[in-house]
Length: 390
Ligand code: SF4
Image (cartoon, rainbow, N blue to C red; front, top):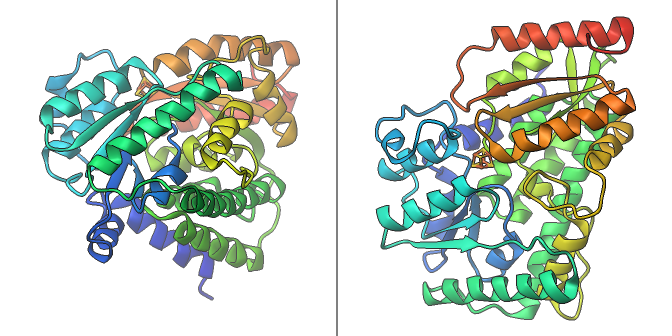
């Protein structure tokens, strides 16, 4: 019998794998006056862009689908891979549909990529987005409101609709319902991981990178309805939280290799931007202030976000407990400074709390997974046998 959930996954996979952005080109044809606004990981305020009649598009580089011919020559060898493949995509025309690109302040590499983009594509709008690292509403909040107004002003100069409070309220509401659907999917993965694989959820969520919020929500809900009908039995796998893949994404086959090694990934930080805010953003009188407050007060812990006096690792331990995970796998992109600088502190916190953990690094175009599969398999066996990794 055919599985309706698989047909949703196939549609999502087609969107993810086609690096020429077919959904974006279709949107542009249907909205000839609309701007397409790309953005690099992790997070930008997508509702702000939608409210201006524009389409936000998350750019995750070229993965393992593109040979880097020219992209390497723009960057030193000892940095991660995503800027090279993003430049390569730009130079070969695959990102031509993007009228503007936003570069959020998550690390020096993204900042440098923004500068490179401005030189390579002077006709396109290229904007640096300075996300606040002060979480006092009167300081960082005010700053972030100004930053969003500045971005809105630049988009208007390129032809976007002026930002209106009611349109922003509606866009925030659409993003809330999309996030609620993703949260339901995440909950199902935690409670019945045998019913929905992490690799399937990965594709269905990532497809939203190029879709308007309402369209993506419909896809996630269709998938949820279908997997709930699936016949599935519990499997004796080890439950793991995967940490560190919030920006450059691992090759899809690497996620599959982890699953085949006996691990259920019950929580992860893939495509963190679509889940960056916990819970609903209220429909306040002042919606731009509501967006700012939500980022300050309910933004998820991640390596590029200052945590002030909070205890490093406490957020991760909370996620391990909430997902009833048996252990943690650190999977960071090679040379990813934010992830790799955070990792020792997170490992220390896990060791202190008695949570087993292991780690490996990847590049988005890594082609060999056998070693990682064996490592994850050994980790899973150790956790099953002794409750801790050796
Ligand atoms: S993978 Fe890490 S170092 Fe590279 S751009 Fe992303 S956050 Fe920055």
